[in-house]
Image (cartoon, rainbow, N blue to C red; front, side):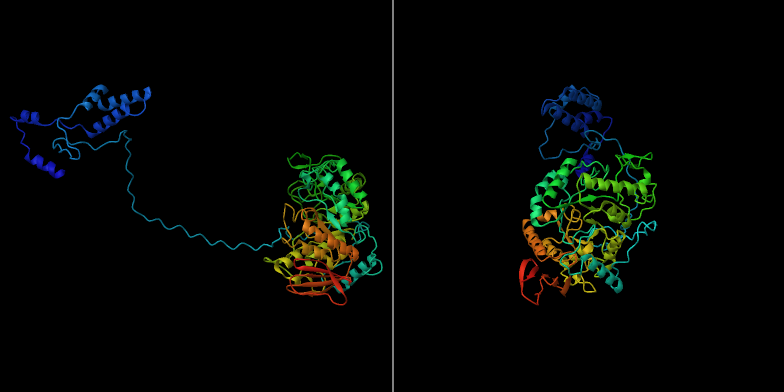
Amino acid sequence: RREEGAAAAKNAPTETAENTGRFFSQRRAPVQPKVEDDFVRNALSFLSSGPKKKKKDVGGLLDVLEAKTGMPVKKLGERKQQAPAAAVPVGVPAPPNPFVVSPPPKAFFEAPAVAPPSRQPNVVPPPPPRPKARPPAPLIAPPPMPKPMFPPPPPPMPKDFFQARPQVAPAPAAAPVLQAQAQVEEQEAGSSTTSNEPEWNPGTGTGREILLQGFNWDSHKNGYYGTIASQAKDIAQMGFTQVWLPPPTDSVSDEGYMPRDLYNLNSKYGTERELQDAVRTLHDHGLQVLGDAVLNHRCASNQGPNGVWNKFGGKLDWDQRAIVGDDPNFAGRGNPSSGECFGAAPNVDHSQDFVRHDIAEWMNWLKTNAGYDGWRLDFVRGFWGGYVKEYLANTDPTFAVGEYWDSLSYSGRQMDYDQDAHRQRIINWLNAAGGLAGAFDVTTKGILHATIENREYWRLKDASGKPPGVVGWWPSRAVTFIENHDTGSTQGHWRFPGGQEAQGYAYILTHPGTPTVFYDHVFYFPELRVVIEALMDLRRRMRIHCRSQVVIQKAEKDVYGAVIDGKVAIKMGPGNFEPTGGEWKITVKGKNFKVWERV
C-alpha cells in the first residue's frame, strides 16, 4: 500500500495557481479520521441494537458524541447514513489519499496518557538461596507421658511426724536391702511369702483384691451414678472386690479433675443424693468403693486483686497462703512446692497446718457422707508422700492407691532394658507414704508395651530373675493395670497395643500385685470380657494373691514362660513353652498366650 501511494503521488498533477481550483474540484472529499468513523459507528450501534437503553445512558452517550465531534448528533447520524461517492468492493482496500494523513486509531474511550517506564538494564536476579536442610526431628519416646521428674528433698518435718523406713527396694546390687524387703513381705503375709492367707493391712487390704475402674473419660455424659448402680450386680458376679469411682466434687472440668468447691458433691456425674444411692447399692452387693481424691491442686472460685484466679470459695475459702510460692501462674504466698507443679490449677501447699487439717477433715466427711471405703489419689507426684501418710493415717481406708506416673527410660525410640530407676521413684513415694498405700505399676505397663509391640519377651525378666516392674520389688504395693481413663478411653494418651489386651490381662491376672481392670474392657468388648472373667475365676480358684511367688522359666525373644505359686503357668508370645513337673491343663488361651492350671 505504501508503494501504491508513492506511485500515485508521483503521477499526480502539479498544483499551480491556474489549476488549483480545478484540481481541488476534481479531488475526492477527504476521508474523515478513522477515530470519528469508529466512534460514530459504535455509538449508533449502541443506540439502535440490543434491548432498550436507559434514558440516562442514552443521554450521557449523546453528550459524549457532541463533545467528541463538535457537531449535533442528529447531523452526525444523517451524515453517517449517506452513501459514499463511490462504492468500494468488499475485500479491496481503498487507495490512500496522498494529501491526508490519518492520525493513529484511538480507543473508544481514551485512557489518560501514561509516561513510559524508565528503561532499566536487563539484570538477571541472583537465584534464591537454597533452603538449609532441616535437621532431623529429635527422637521422642512413644508414650506421651510427662518428663521424668526428680523432686527436691521434702521440707524438714518434726521428728515425731514421720520416721522414714529403710530403703525398701533399691537397685538389685543392694542385696541386704532386698532381703530386708523380703522379710517385710513375709511378715505382712502372715507366716511366709507363699502363705495362702495373707493378713489384712491398712491401705493395702487382704491381698486378694481385684479392682475395677468403674468409669471412662466420658462417663459424666450419661447419667453416671444411675448407670453404675444398675451394673452393681453384674460387677459383683464377675468377682471384683472394689470399684473405683470418679471425682465427686464440683469441678471446672466436667470429668472432675479440676476440683473447686470441695464440699459441693453435685457434679456432672450426678447429684449428691445419686452418689449416695450408687455407693449404697454397690455396698449391698458386697463391693467396696474407692473415691477419687484430687489433693494436689484446686481451682479458685474468684480472681484476686491482681486478676489471678487464686481466691477459693465454698466452705474452704483459703487465701493465697494455701498456694505454693514457686508456682509462676497463681501468685501463691505459701512455701515452695514439695513436688511438681500441675500448671493448669493452683498447687495446694500441704506444708500449711490449716491446709492439712482441712483436707483430712474433708476426706473423713466424704467417707461419712458419701460412704467411701478407700481412696484413689490423683497426681501424687505433685506433693511429698509424707503428707499422704498423714491423710491416710487420719482417714483409715481399707485400700488406697496413688497415681505416680512419669516417663520410663528410653534411648531414642528404644525403651531401655533397665527400668530400675523408674520403679525406684515409685518405691520412694511408697516409702514416704509409710507403706499405707499402693501405687499403680506404671513400670510394668510400659514394659508390656515394648514387649508385645516389638516381640521382645526377654524384657519380662529383670537382671535378678524377677518381674521387671514394681511387682518384682514390692508386689503387695504394686497395683497393676494395662489401661485407664487417661491412657485409653477417648483420650488415648498411651493406649495398650491394639488387639493384644487379652495378653496383657493374662499377665497381670496371673501374677502377684493387685490387678485393675478397665471399665471399657468389661462393658464394651464382649469377647475380651469372656477372657477377663475366665482369668479372674482362675485367680480366685488358685488363690493367687498380691504376694504370690513367680518362677520365670523362659524369657527369650519370642516367648515368656513362668509358673506362679506352683499352681498356675503362663506362656506369652508365639514361641514354645510347656510347663513341666506334673499334670497341667489349659484353662484359658488366646492370641499369643496360654494359661494352665495344675490338675
